[in-house]
Length: 167
Image 1: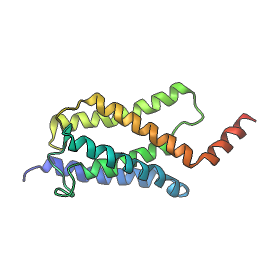
Image 2: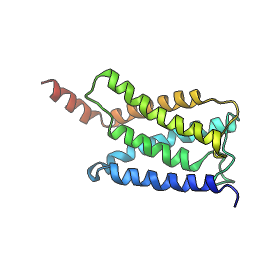
Image 3: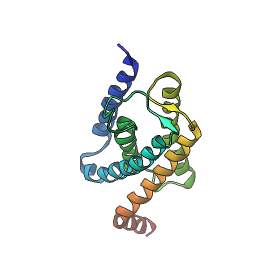
């Protein structure tokens, strides 16, 4: 059976990511969690297609939508948006700048590290005119943009919590 490892990784990614969402998105924040999820999907839709179509990255093995789209449906449209959702829900808003930078670094580093492993040992992703640090930078930027959007969308809540904490 060809690509057994790749298929297992994709299925495991769906299961693990689904469990992370079920376990770590509180019931009272499900509606709030949809905002960063959908926003990250928009970003990855646009950016992911550009990167693939320009030949920077290739996804040799895809389980879903093989003929419709050259990008990885699993990672671009489910895993990254789900991780971005958790990133936003648990962002250390009231902590100092160093903690916030480390939070970004931790999240982007984990994803980049797993991507490097996938590049090296599987046929899930192949760098053509790309390197790991471009992944790290683009993940950091997209997390930042999603955080800005998230704060903007919930600006009334953030302005209330920040003014009440300063009193």
